[in-house]
Length: 313
Image (cartoon, rainbow, N blue to C red; front, side, top):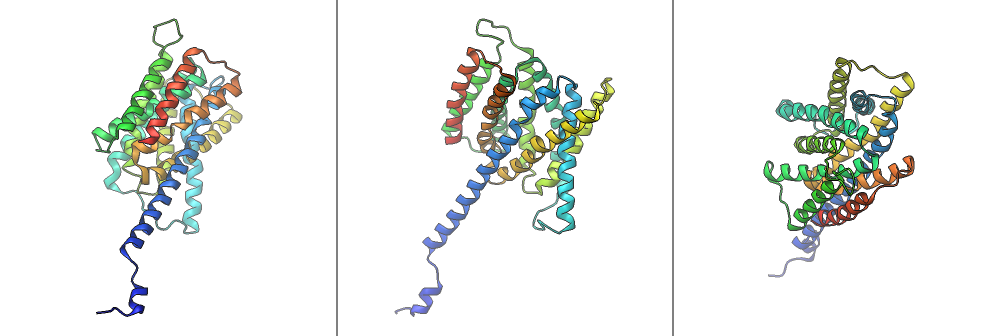
């Protein structure tokens, strides 16, 4: 029996539907990759400028102000969205996510405190590259706990990134003594690696709410610890500078990072996010006129190769 031509015209082929579906997925993934790169760029700004602020600010207080700036700025944006009923499709956080929210906040209190301690003892360029260890912890937790798949290329990339962090963990080419500053940075990366996976479990929810909770929870927590141990708030000019930096480098960065995680997952997003330390290192060299030692350049080469394999996987 011959089917009428009008029926044929109205019934799209299975191949056409599949191609359309694949095209939509590809566009979504490309957007997610772009979000991850932009997020990395925003975050990279925090390293050299935090180093400048640390000359007049305690590390714990600065960590609190950075997150608080992210929370205040994103809360203002969230209120605008609510007033004009924008993003009505976004799903609000609920009680079922409470355990991930608590873990996310606690880890976000610890991580920047560790980072600021390390930054005060190390060069900004080295800290920027050591931040890549976050990829390792994020990917391992994602694989072992949340069962995300790790390809052979991704595994090679992780091994190379780990090697680069080991090279940077030594104070100089001729010394085998371990840098305390590097250890603090690695602790920060471990905390953020765990936190990234908690955030991944919330990524289907409104990312603005996530940033607000992160900002106020972690910011007030870190500030509370700083004030408790006898540190004081800075003068208004420095306080505002820290809040603005936090809004840009932490607020927008986390917002875009969560959007990227929706499509890419925790390990893959961290892989694309690896561009942040390169940007941070370049900015640090420009700002501080620091000429890195031989171990920096060796680590950079190993890290570049590791990033290539990680992105390929």
